[in-house]
Image (cartoon, rainbow over all chains, first blue to last red; front, side, top):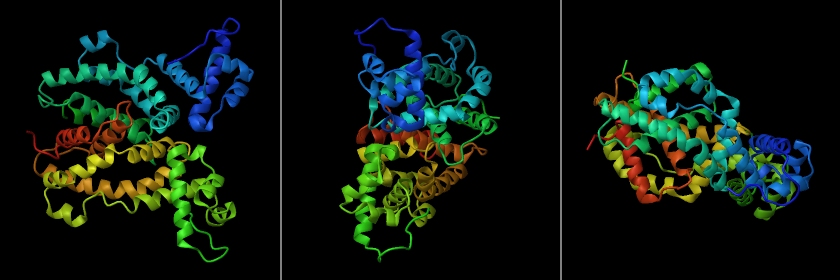
Length: 202
Length: 202
């Protein structure tokens, strides 16, 4: 991702944050097609030139706003946890947090925008993929390996496809006409984990 | 869906088609945020008033363009086929067509736009859901019931969740940074069907 360009005065991190926050809000509200550098500048309370001095285009700005936001998220198990804790226990520990995130309006709105721009502006999806999705897929893959060794998966199951089925179900479900609340999402996640072999059958 | 309004001269179906086609193209290219009635009229070669006489807003127009497009699609088994043909045979028969559709640029672009607008403009998703998704879910549900009776699914498996896992994987996969080609999509669909219990294990 191209980011800051070297020209102009020394950077003020407060200004950067205000711009990124405004860009994120406008991206979620209007999509990359509906936002403009001008609106971002106005909402951040800075001049247009201040934004252009840092980002060459609204696409780059939206991509960095996504990166900035998701890098602070801690909604995945650490490597140590994945190694030491059984998948069923790990998933149970994270269930409330996962359900709350997936059922939240902000998550739904952000996912909608990123998927929505994936064909017209693939750089945004690439950023999200690299900084948010890939580390979580790695953790899921380790958990599925565990389940495979416990005999709950077919020995030749394709783990990438299985991860798509789990993650895909969640993003697909939360964008359907009747989005789930937190309680429904808890039930739903358990069903997915069981179906994928991560939880033992009842 | 509110559609045509009764005022003005008698309707010319050619004009309707030209407007719907232009609306569909602009929706896919720019999203509902990036399109306008003015552009639709220009691309269809008609006056703005001609469009407004028929549709009150670009949202209604986009919804009807989606409905108009997907209603002509025949990419699902008939009720008779679902009743008479075994799921594994049915899926095998449809595999080429399904893989070709899912891997096509048009499908990816349309799905991206509909998911992308699902939080900001839920009426578009509702239209797509009712006219395109629901009939296909009904067929999938009947096939899964079959598989359940054949003992390939847990007796208490939640079929709606399972359908989300299958359909969700496909839409999620085709919007990822490295979209699959037709051959990869064939392999991918087979994996999904097997994982869901619709195809016997190798």
